[in-house]
Image 1 (tube, rainbow, N blue to C red):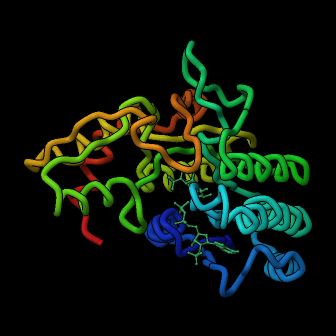
Image 2 (image 1 turned 120 degrees about the horizontal axis):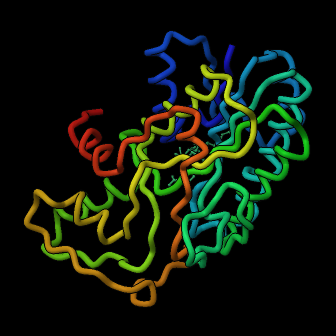
Length: 279
Ligand SMILES: NC(=O)c1ccc[n+]([C@@H]2O[C@H](COP(=O)([O-])OP(=O)(O)OC[C@H]3O[C@@H](n4cnc5c(N)ncnc54)[C@H](OP(=O)(O)O)[C@@H]3O)[C@@H](O)[C@H]2O)c1
């Protein structure tokens, strides 16, 4: 039996679809059934269920809100909640898959991609709490996969692709940041990796998983809107201020995942598949 936290989120929903395809037995929960901020109930629920594996997809993901009005909740969910899930996983003898983010890095690396063991230095509250979540998992247990991902898009959530498409309906011109670089990630690719590590008994530890190739948000937007007549114009981060500071360069090295034999599509291929899908 597998347990999902945050099973109705963007990634959780994609993962459920894949688990259904594979015929894996799972229970999917969200805050109404398993509120991970309730430490006692989380321990009780998980130790009663004794899942072999927990896919911990629940998170506070409002990156800008986390800087002020969401700060407390961000801490409660991403740090304390993750610690509770990890402690319960340890007590129940479950493996844990925790999803983290490229925002644990400061984005100033200029001499190549971020390696899994590179120094972390989050610049935002969200990045800080996701990193503390990683550390909580590592302190509490051994049988974990921490998978850092970035720029996630999928058919089951709010994301950059949908934002661009929505804006394109009412704008002839869009300005998009051209000085932040990263790797877009299709939820399907990420969900496949989350099952791949289990199926293949991959060594526990920290992995990076995004789609291949990197780009700026501007380049990503151009590709999303390439079949429209909307003009996409580049701007700098200074011209488009946001509450939370984003890493300027957060391209993560994927070789640890690839060395397992996992084939990673490019973000352009992933986007093309995604755009053909219907909910
Ligand atoms: N989206 C990205 O670009 C991105 C990038 C890097 C890493 N990640 C990581 O990827 C993972 C999945 O993200 P996502 O895009 O699927 O986010 P999401 O759509 O916001 O899903 C998060 C889920 O967690 C649930 N949740 C929130 N508080 C909870 C609580 N107290 N107890 C139980 N469940 C709770 C949410 O439920 P409600 O909706 O009911 O609150 C939601 O279903 C997260 O760990 C995130 O940090 C995401």
